[in-house]
Length: 320
Length: 320
Image 1 (spheres, rainbow over the protein chains, first blue to last red):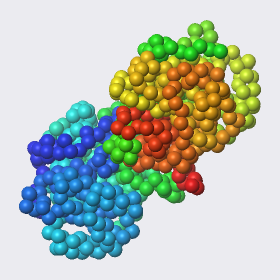
Image 2: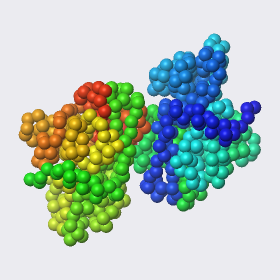
Image 3: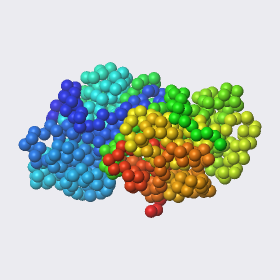
Image 4: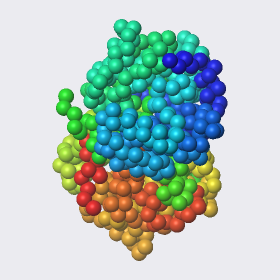
């Protein structure tokens, strides 16, 4: 198993990538604070390149490849933000990117990956098919696999968002972040532990994809086979590495319902006039629904991204 | 007829209101510039209080009322952003607001006005019914009528957005703004004429609500009786006052189609991750569709607001 990254490593990663990523805005809203009962600071990674924090980790991981390995390019399988992140990071380094995408991936995501110049291979949509197709691609090309979260270099890159947030707002009592595969919350918690040890870091997960919650509470990994949470970025389960990071550095994990996610997402669209994807509404939902005591506290919230299909909005399809 | 405001008056107005309004962000996007072929700077009044630039003018006009007149409160009729703007401006001054709203106004707008503590009177939705109901309200209360644009104090307040934009980005070649009743473009053009005389100010209008275009080209006002452009904030026609301001200070007026408005709105949502209402996409549509030559120019774009019904998005209903 890979080692848990240190705060020093996250600082170094940040220095390496900071000219390549956007320093995203930290936004506040009186109306949102009124509802939440605390003072919220939104770190807007929906404004990041490719529309998501994933570009931070991908930029770092792609950048760390030794030259002789990088020549053969990088590869991954993803239908989401990680695919675009790896594609753009590879383009910026000037090396090929090979992305395996499920054949039912939304066209808009396929176009975005292609726009960044990546080579796309389609597979059936099962996890097994995606993985075996990726293996074939790697065998054929010699490309280096960039895992979306089970990689210390990825975790270090993701931690840079929390460094910027704490630089802008050093006195946060709590940081809330979403938990999918665990890369973002791991990087966030390690960054906070070094930068601001009194700041508590709490992960938030959809109730119907609560593998991290169960793992954290029981001390044993509980991978989930499948889930259809509206927070499509959070359907994955923790890896051994991210689970170790979370056990060591995260203070708590709480869950929110599908209704709470959609309601919070819409509230932020309406009041803050920013587009956030469902996964990004998950930590805000914890703040709005008393899943964490934030009364009169200063709370950082990592908005993970803003990529979604604008043809169908979740509140238009969701019965609750 | 009221007199055309001067640049000095706009400067004074700005000094009076600047602690009461948000200094909104000016955003840029590489992807948007790539499509437009020029460098665009978006003045984000969707982040303004009440979600629209209208709060600037309302704050100034309500603030300018002499104390003895203000005691009886203010009144207006509006189903849109002006209603919320007057309601909040009155609340902040501590005087009553009486708002006449059509009985078919969206509930979300009614709630917003009520949340600001305004007194609402419903009328039938025709222009005549709204005006006669307003007259009754004014007779009953002695409130001062705050017109949405045919008022020099309103125009002065709206001009403050362009002052901030030009302070942040002094070397703009062009500013594009939407034209409805003409208050925003009038204030913008007067502000630019004093602050940055080389900056051209061009108004943009929906083709199907082109009264300002016709008036500007013929030298005579051409009010339009009714129109159903998707840009619901731009359905009104110029007043004598705003027409005079435009004749004197605006460099050109161009028009865009309904399809161009909706396409531009969606593009900005997708690429910039901000929520703008259809009226706000009108000037961007001119930039994206070569209605104005912006090649290699620096172009300011006033994003007028971000209030809309998130249950129905225009691209979900529009056949083109």
